[in-house]
Length: 355
Image (cartoon, rainbow, N blue to C red; front, side, top):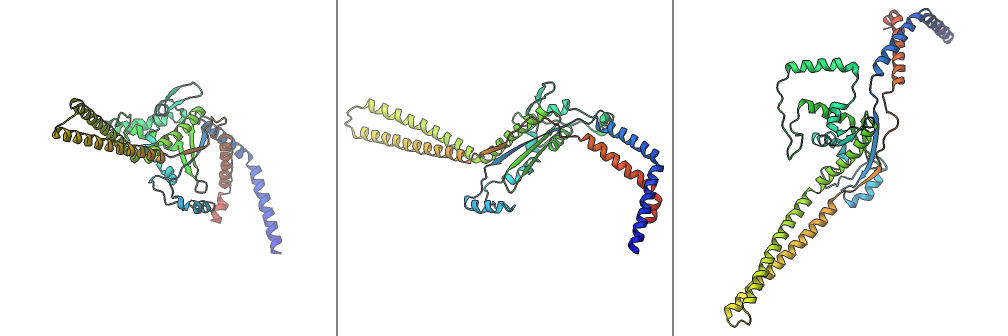
């Protein structure tokens, strides 16, 4: 009996609900029209954006002794390769993409737009040529005007070693561009497959693809420079020592040859002694030069061994279809929310009693 009463009550409530909707169909129609117009007015001016992904498999510096066990554990989503001799290993690449020094290095990447074939650096592109939502232009102008009232004169410090920007001291304008780059570039690392995926989002499809490929190269150069820094210093050091030893050996050879040519068939003991001293000095310089050459070759081999290898799994391609914004989905969601809000408004008394 209780179930029958509940079904009858539910049927009565359903009829009442649909009757209420029919009685207020004019209100729903107005809400839908207003919501549709406002949603279209907001979403249509939003610039479209594209997404490109690049996947690379970096060479790991993990201990070879745990390679088999690490491969077995990776199948269960675990990473036991903690024997890395590097401070920056693939697991930390996503954190590297958030660092100011790495992102500032992306400012000078040359990009070309697909629409008007404009070629410029990425910083200038974001600052001057990126499309804006014209509905937000008055708001942005008001924000800049308010900031100008309270902002003082900003000190611009040029970058070191001939670079345009100093990551240690950025202006407010450069910081805004940096935050925009941080939003457009994403890096993810898969523990199970050891694959690093770089995702780039931009309004222009060609810029998106060029930037993804350039960031991959920038990452490789950044990691290579870090991994080979000590090896390069050692190589340059032994190369310099080898060059100095070669000069000293050549001087010793010239001095010995000049002395021997000037003293043919020597009979005096001091001449023979001097000749032996010069010959020993020349041989000593030769041994030092030979040892430095060996060290230079070893340092070159170590530099080559320390240079990481990145295997590209997915190349950058120019996207054909935009990734967003999803305009139809946005309008549909807004209409759904407007309908829910209107129903709640009509049932406000019942809801108030229920709560």
